[in-house]
Length: 229
Length: 229
DNA sequence: GTGTGGCATATTGTATACAAAATGCAACAC
DNA sequence: GTGTTGCATTTTGTATACAATATGCCACAC
Image (tube, rainbow over the protein chains, first blue to last red):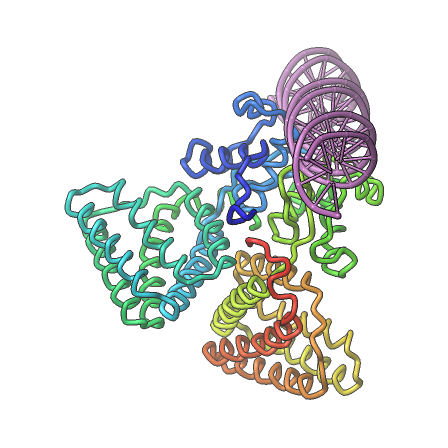
């Protein structure tokens, strides 16, 4: 026996529904604050209310949905303060991941990251923004993976999803892009040098730049929504 | 209108069931690895399967339960590695909370913490372990509250619950107790001095002591359970 | 004995039915 | 007009019924 202990993944309906909803939220099809009508969503997803409601509970646990008793679920709408807290936490998580990664990184890991960096520079040179975003995410995920702490990775992913659900359109200009690419280069160098403190600082500063850009775009909607979490 | 915008908290059945189950798990009535039979639990909690299953989803999101498709839910059984990762993460969270707290603490906060410290020393002097535990928790919660980041607090609480579910009985002796009380004293001093780095180190070291004691007791059950998260 | 097939039972997964609460609207009072 | 009451409708909350899967056991072959 022992097929490597990997039980073939058969998605149950609540899991499938949650995955679909998560995507809809992160892609911005379901916007922050949107009310989710159960009956309506059931028809669209082709499931009955029972599994859908279980999906709601899962997403609420991830902080993507807010459920109000007798008043249904709605997509989380982070206030400016909420976003600030989420980014602050994200900085701590990324910084910690960097420290761990620097302590545990292997030569193979570094080689892999250097490849990603080359691809990123290419995307940058070709003005290929979608590819840049994809590789950017891959690099950050890789650092997290190198950190080798599943609890951290899980927390990071969940919070990341919540931030993506913000649907920010920060004014992304050439100067910021150039800077970001350069920062990634520095990160990989810090990692290769096993300089945890430097990598930590780089990651936190890197994120802070994004945070400021995002919070800038949220300036006006200040007291609007605002949920507890 | 405006009754301070505090909608009276009416617990829905899934929430109530989840709260009850969470308590049962943390108090050790439901032990790690225990299989949860839906029908059975329904009778004991006096709810039907629908709300119970929603409660399961919530607790699974908190990492207190593991759900296997078609095979039901069971209380999470952390492997030694899982516990190590959880503690590692916890250290990062507490350390970060300490840094934030040092930057944001007010004189009132410090006064409150000093009071707690006095109570802790009293409990220590009277050999009152339950009270000590209560105040210990209060101090750590207070530091987290002073940090002023709800996202951090939420993550901290959730992970803390998972660790408590381990049901460790680390050999707690007089020497360790003395040391712990002294460490708390140092923490509050570091906080009063607004020395974030020092507080961070103290909190991490403080936790590491507990971690080592716990992992020690888990030495034998090494490869036994082991869940993914 | 060991292992296999197949059935009965138990358990979980999903859909639906019914209950309770919230919502919207119209009639009415003032 | 403004505000309020009560009812019809919609929506959510919970229980239950039915379907699908897993589990345990026994008979049987070898």
